[in-house]
Structure formats: structure tokens, C-alpha cells
Image 1: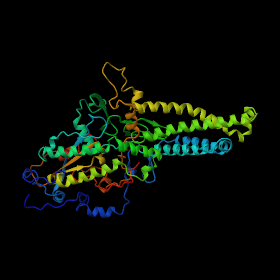
Image 2: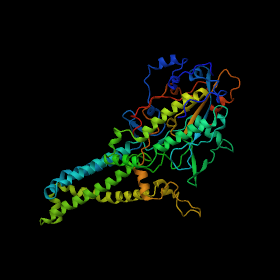
Image 3: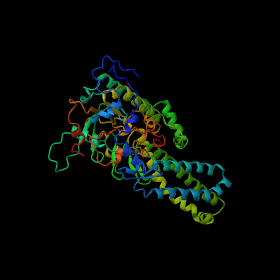
Image 4: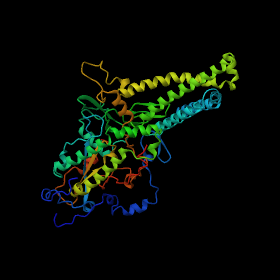
Length: 356
Length: 170
């Protein structure tokens, strides 16, 4: 070792091999593909991978149009009357709430919820090696589980046959999106995306601000109709007088939404305070009724404030699926060639695809 | 960082591969070792420090454990819940999360430090021993993948190179 000089190595030089130099120049003619184009899950991508959505997002346009139409009617018909009779802050507050609601909704829908990328073939082979498979290969083996200790409590990890890896704790596979999602809460059709680790805070601020918005609009419309009634008319006359009965439509929409949205907000506030997910609560994973053993929630910090802060104000984890990274040239070849040097791509990471 | 590895103790281990350029010409991928996550403290990112048996002949235990422990410390720093993360969270909420479009989060800053650290470790410690660490972020933070390279010319290379990668369970 003393005879040879130690040369400064740059691992990035590994990606350019002398044997494949010719292939490299040939492949330069092809457009380099981004990783989102070969993503195996059922997701749709827009803006060259910046925006991610579930494949079935049928109800998201309905949610957006309900919010926009109701607020539009509010600004057009209630605000002029209320500004004249009450205060100019009414449209200001309404405007701020509306912007917040729409931004939270779009952020929830378009953010990667915490999708776990599928295991590479080598990883999958390694995991298979460590599992003892008894029985014939003609039938599907029983679900494989692994028990681990988290904070002195036994937790079972399940093996995901699609992603070929043992799911981390609190991770669940969403069949609609065909992805494993970390800290999986639920798949929300109104939002058109799964709600998981990375977008739970956006979802929570969406439903809280929507509760405020619907209550606010409901209150304003009631005030509007009441004020008109006080001028000596009956309710029916007041409604007929106000432009084409639109406040009545707002009342109906708000009345039905308030019950569901307020209920949902209350439920999620409880979940946040006890550091639970909807999935765990529905399955009763940590319910104390099961058995005599102490099966409390191992993830809770045993303090409501700490739980809330950890869930909502915790650090924002990065997206693991690297949608906008480029596929390295050797991965374009479908079969994994064991004899070739299979080197991990040391591509320079942009900040753009780490955000969101 | 510990600095340069002392030459006296690792003379017998680092003689085969002096730099990665030599590795490129003469070596082939023999095996991959996967260091799994350690969930004993919850869902925060930690990796097991158990020394895998495949690396016993390639690298000293202490060097490997140091690397994994430093990585664990970096991840703990990134995921720490404290004053700065609360401030970041509240500021983000107040700006309707638009601030994420222009500001780099603390987690991303630590990830860059981790990438630099792994590159340094590869250059200084792992490449001279014919090993290569893959940044866990490229494997979905599930595993630390260590690739083991063998000298094509050497006769005593470990067997089962193609049988492992080409196993039937796909």
C-alpha cells in the first residue's frame, strides 16, 4: 500500500465506464426519462412530475366547485348588503378564509402523502432469503409477519406482496393508489389523494379552515336574512327580495356541510391529540379492550400538547419517490444484469424535487 | 470525522483495492448487504448497528459502527422536535404553506450533509476496501445498501455472486 499513490476518487466517475462509453453517446440521442414516467403505482403526474394525484380523483372537482360557487355567491350577494349594514371586515375575513381553504386543499391533493418506493430486486431477494418458507410453491404462502419491539411493546410488521418489503410501522398499502404510504391515515375521495405522513397537516388545516369558513358563511347569511326581516318584512318576503334566492342555496349547502365538516374536525382533533391515525382507530389496534396485556399506543408522547406539536409542527420529511430525477442509462435496460457493474446512480439532486 | 485511517492496522484489509478507478477496471459486483431499520424507539429513522457477517473479512467492526452511528445521529438531528421545528411549522402554517416553495426545510439541509458525509466515507474508508455505501434516501430510507466488489482476477473471492442477485424470488 505504501508503494501506490492514493488518488482522490470521485464516485461520480463510476457512472461513466469505458466499456459503455459508446452506448452512452448512442443513448444521448434519446430523451432522458424522468422517474415519474416509470412509476409503478396508480398515480397521475402533472407539470413534469411536480404535481402528484391519485388516479381516481373524481370528487376533487366537485369539492373545489362547491367551495368556489358558495363563496362566489357569498361575495356577490351577501357582502354588499352586510358591508353597508355592518362592517367592511366581513368580506376581508371571508376572503382570507377562502384563500386558506383553497391553498390547503390544493396542497393536500397535490403533495406526495409519503409514498414508499418499491423494493429493488436485490432488496427483495435479500428479504426472501431471510424468511423461512415452508410448504410448496404452488399456493400463496400465508401472510408473513415480523414482530418487533417498539418502546417495549410488541408490534407486528406485515410483508407487502406488491412492494416486496416489510412495511414499516404505521405504514399501510392503499389499494386505490397501489402504493404503501407512511403513517397512512385514509384515502380521501374529496381530496383525491391519500392522507399520510407528509400531507396530514395540510389536510388538518383544510378541514379546520373549512369549518370556520362554512360557519362564517352560515352566520353571515342568517344575519343577512334576519336584518332584512327586521325592516318589517316576513322571512318569505325577505328571501324573495334578495337577489334570486341565492342566499337560500348557500344556507342549504352550509347547513349540510357544517354537520359533517365539524364532526370530521372534531374527530381529527382527537386523533392528533392522541397521536393516532384513522386507520389505527378504526381497526382498534391500540384499544385496551383486547386482552389483559398493556396495549397502549406506543407512539404517543403521553401529553396532548406534545402530540399536537409533533404531528402538526414536526419536521417536514422529504419525498422518497424522487419524481423528477432522471433515470440512469443502465436502468433503462429492463432485465437486471448481474454480471455488469450495477452501480448506484450518484446523480446530483436538485432541490426542486425534494420539495412537496 | 476521525480523519485518515491509520495505515498500520488496516494494511491487510486495504491492499486489494487502492482506489475506485482500479475497482472499476478489475472488479465486479459480488454481493450486496442491507442494513435494516431499527424501530425500537418508534418510527424515527435509525439503522441497526449490528455488524453483518458478510463484511467481517472486509472492514473493521469499529469503522462500520462509527459510520452507522454518525448517520443515526444525523437523522435524529433532522427529525428532532424542538424549538426550531416548531417555529418552522408555525411559520409555514401562517403563510398557508407557501413558504415551502422558496425555503429549504431543515430536513433537506441535513440530508445534504448526509450525502456529503457518505461520499466522504466512501472515498476515504469504503472504496479502498472494495465496498460502496448507497445513500439510504435512494432506497426510500428503508435500508443502507452496501455493495461488495470482488477482484475479478483473485481466486479467493467469495462465491455465490450471481446466484444471490439472480435468485428465483422475484
